[in-house]
Amino acid sequence: MRKAGTKKGAVVGSGGQRRKSLEGKGPTPKAHERPNHKAYRKPAGTGPVRGPERRGPERRDTAPTAELVAGRNPVVECLRAEVPATALYVALGIDADDRVEEAIRMAADRGISVLEVSRPELDRLTHNATHQGLSLQIPPYEYAHPDDLLEIAKNSGEDALLIALDGVTDPRNLGAVIRSAAAFGAHGVVVPQRRSASITAVAWRTSAGTAARLPVAVATNLTRTLKDWADTGLMVVGLDADSSITVDELELANGPLVVVVGSEGRGLSRLVRERCDETVSIPMAPRVESLNASVAAGVVLAEVARRRRAAGRT
Image 1: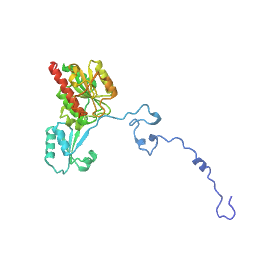
Image 2: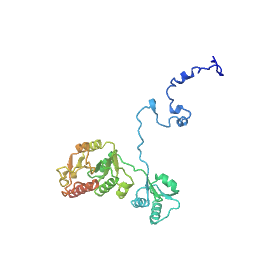
Image 3: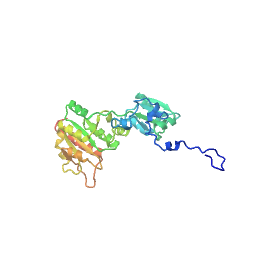
Image 4: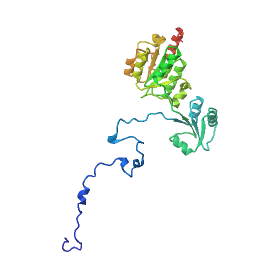
């Protein structure tokens, strides 16, 4: 009722609305159930299942993607090394110099598409890298399976010679190892899936084109791959600076062999070292502590090739 001395009418209560506002509204609807959410307009089955309806662990898509090499010098170097490429992007209104003309000429001779794009578009494609108006698209490298390397060695009619890299993360080292492996008659290179360099434009250039001729495989588990290879009769030799056996005493060179090269800093991992049948070191001057991984691989491969020639096995 109205209080005395006021001009207001009867006091109206909330009708229970305040009490209702304090009550929970239940669980939040899923994204595809909310009309104002973008997932509401997305057809069912086009994306991953989330929340309690999830059926299994989601796996991030790790498929390799195309790479864009930016800059006039890097692009020309890739084309000179015959790195596989699918497109050459040239900015509109570019100030053409000898490098630009050479890049366009080499791309045309190899049947690579030459595409003119605006500078903002080229900035977007290269993620604002210093492209100098020139960029080269390189397709993802097609890796082999470790079993493929065994098959290639078997079909060659020679004793298998394979290279395994353990913890080598510099693509320049990877490219140099591939080049040495091809030069000394190896049948392939294997790298672990994780914590390893991959075949990028830098690796392509360093390999001087040999990456197109020598297969490179990816091992999901390098230790298991080495065990599988050992079960087929291959001997596993690892490079270890602390080994008392030097490369000059590598008697295993004249049979099916896997040479394992570790990183320059840490060397071989414990599990990989335990999987080796033998470890060897490279004799060096006292003031030198270690060699670059690719240089060390080249030294051992050269010794293996020398011993095989002396034994008449190649």
